[in-house]
Image (cartoon, rainbow, N blue to C red):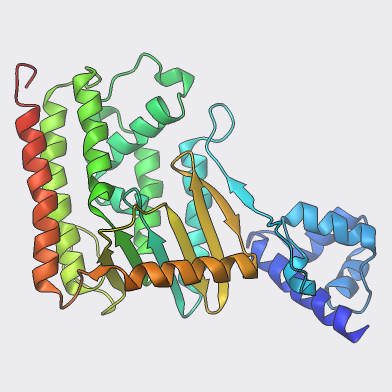
Length: 337
């Protein structure tokens, strides 16, 4: 009985982390189980053991797997989905959920993030509204095919300012969280290919916008290089300020990364896996998190550190990115340019 009571207490501690700050855990449990507040308190404190039916309701509602609690070796892992879908979940709503998660991370001491990046980590885009404008438009028109974007062409001037404001909040919060990012050359090339596809397809409303994007990309690369040199992230246009060694950037030349994120909140590990490029599957399954952590640790050992003191490797890497932008400019400077 004592062991089950302790497991129940641990279960409710995890549930508490999942309940938004503006909601009451006691109220949520009472409503879900159809019991009084007093009965809900007794279950949360472990004074009354949950019935099998109550346990099933709680685990389904809060997306919790009991395998790790009881030491069950299972191939089944419970994920929560954070997706974008036309007419259901908008980009802005998705960003609100992302911000809520990052804010929780920033509030926990000893939080670290390891980000294996096939695509450029999205929070970097918001350093430059013009770049964010293109990515958000690309997601909505080409990736998710939002109906209202069917006949639209891209224009920097039509960027949704509310989305940028939410992006700014994510950016301001994310720079506070110590992060390790693992890139490879393709991480940046993919973005250039998307811009080139729009250019070739005639999807720029104003042809000059492509040159504005090129200018901003060059500024962005230099800012990324500055952040890597300082060893911390900071907002473009502001004086460099941050916690030393809180931003580590690695280049991996032998493995094509997949967008995998491990957040370690003072020992509590959360895994984010992407699907459909930006939609996310999220789990706190301990066994799965351990296997992902081993993989990412091994990937780091096979990667080259290009931040902080690694001046030579850093220059080589960012010179390649700058060269790619120059080559891109040359390719589109034909009859359309």
